[in-house]
Length: 213
Image 1 (cartoon, rainbow, N blue to C red):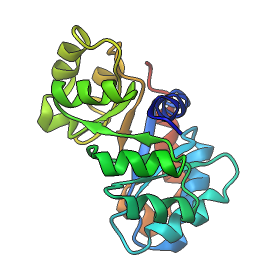
Image 2: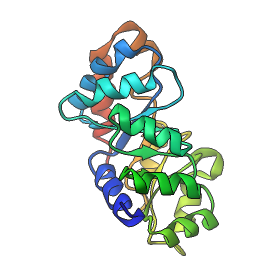
Image 3: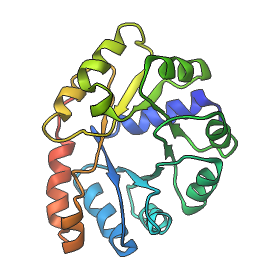
Image 4: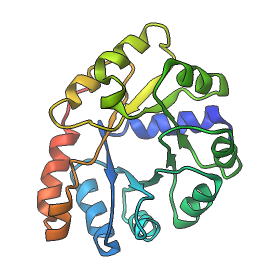
């Protein structure tokens, strides 16, 4: 799968909802009910970060939930690509991009949402064929003002800002012409997961799904 096809696939995912939940799952037993709650709330695209020992098991469990489009986040290497795809991930998200990672995703036909934080990084990804990218870390890198400035010289690039995105600033990002959606963890807080408060997560997801863009 070429980078251009990968980018088309990730753009279609980004267009499904204004928010992609960024999920850090410690207990694999939370995976299925969490996915069910988020999908019920209108957020079908789920990013499970490979930051915990439970991540791959969680991806497998979530992939069985009807309506869920499950991907792996914090994908850093070819090894991560293989592990994520074997677990059932249908896309990958990375904080940056390396030749090895891009080659592995192409070889495994796993759509990649590659990270970029500077104009040079965006230009390098555009040269490879990527048009849809993750802007990370969004807040520290300059926030909505920075992304607005990038749109002038680089209108071909569309972003999913992640890192420091919250209910308080999500609208500022989503109002930009070069933002397709945002990534955020606020829709699945650890305390609600620990308490098994799935109706509470449905409510948060429904609010996020209703954000204008």
